[in-house]
Length: 353
Image (cartoon, rainbow, N blue to C red):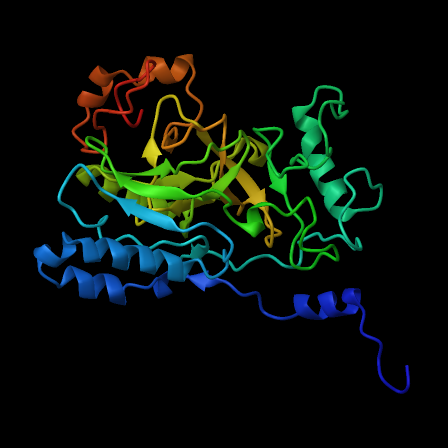
């Protein structure tokens, strides 16, 4: 037009796909601030100023969650000023050695204008989500009670159906930022506190506002590792009783051994045998089915000041109970098989089976 090429969203998006994907490497995890604080006297690390600095560190890391409420550090149990300074707050994945970059070649996107219509016959994201819904629904049809089907979110952005993967619209989709199929990428909406507990160390607690069922609470973020590296670290972590390794082995990935795992050693959540949260596989800017984000959603309504927790052992069924009795754990000398202090009525007595 007038001697200049016409730039459309489609041509712009295709050009962006040819650029190298942006992602973070685990070797670049920040540690300078943590090292400096750990070199200071214990009296400083136990001072109120340490909590202020810790909160500022978290706030600075939330540069892609600008509308998320702040996170506060609360301790009315011990003299510790803040959680251990090995902690690095992040809401992103950091790729370990041997893990390939995000797969842009196989990443499906839609060409919708405005907001995606969940009843659309042409939206690529609708088609992809519907394809992955079928195994979870007996006759392949969507329940009438499911309001935005086949998207997994309702009109308020709450997860309507658990146990299945989420396929959100991505950076190469033509739809607007307020598309109903963009929830995880818009970030956390509810305030939480990092709070010291009496028996379980530091945990994540709801603030003073009730949280609805199906609400997005954050990402189980950390280092994305090959399963071989995860196994090597796991053997070491087990000995000194601290592990936050999560094998990516969701049901929709099939029965084969997992290829990757996430190590959230520096940013943990607390376990419960009767959890109020669950981890759901979510795909946004990643075309590989083996590398979802591990997103945390509430399984039920969460009361004000209630602790947020999920099960380290996944779904707890009769087999879990049978093979997780405290006597079986005590037979293993690894420190990771510690007593569980979740306090639920159906507590198994141990953190890991």
